[in-house]
Amino acid sequence: MTVNRRTLDLAAPARPRAATAGPAAARSAQVPAVARAARLLDTLAATRQALPLAALVKALALPKSTVHGLCATLAQAGLVQRLDDGSYQLGTRVMDLAHAYMARTDLTAEFQALLQAEAPMPEESIVLSVLDGADIVYVGCRNGTRPFGFNFRIGMRLPANCAASGKAMLASLPAETVTELALARAFYPLTRKSVTRAAPLLAQLRQVAEQGYAVDDEETRQGMVCIGAPVFSAGTTAAVAAVAVSCPKTTLNAQRKALAIRTVKQLAGDISWRLGARPPA
Image (cartoon, rainbow, N blue to C red; front, top):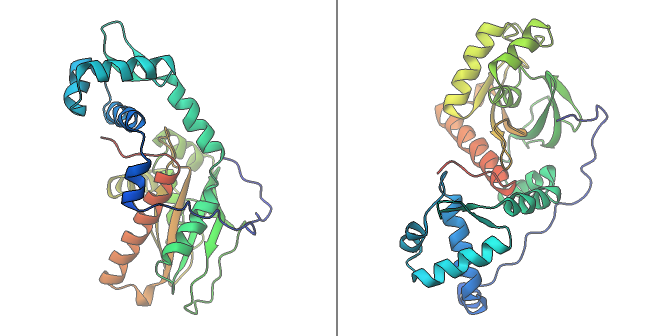
């Protein structure tokens, strides 16, 4: 993902959330056939392999004739595909719909909407960044209420090897890609704790991938600790962005650190969900 080096504009307000009706109203408005078709698609989406008709009948607890009719109709629409052995899997039309949804989804707007709705850790700074080569670029930020002496701004660039959000994204890339960047000296230090060499950086990134979050312990700025988590979109293995929270090191006790980890993982997970990413079944 390449981002213009100029300051990005986030002046546009976040899209309003869709209004939701109450449970009774939602049930009365349901079209049974559509609801059954949605359940069938969800069932196919939850498995990595095609399912025979009998398995779908059992999973949906519906008559065989009903499930067969649903499959035939969805197959005509391209939403499911019938294989030669009679089993069913999701059809290519689903990907077209996913791409159409993604084209209408604004990453920064989703970030802003979540911050406005939930206001997590208001005293600390929370940022959204994307990877641009060996750098990160901030595309969203909310500076905290705590006096910190450091303000994040849209368009600010930092070396990915130093920042928590940068390491969260680098951990999703092939090791060869990170090694090439390190050997090309694309990474650079900001403090004496910054890591630029391939071997120790890859060791950090393996731990990041295992635990689901990254830590910048005074690698970007002395006295500052940041914790970041990766954001994914539908069908991607490489992170498309990362969320991070920054705290003064003097205030980051064990309880506060645990809260920061939960906060960034929840925010990153919520944004990923809105971008269509789903955890493996």
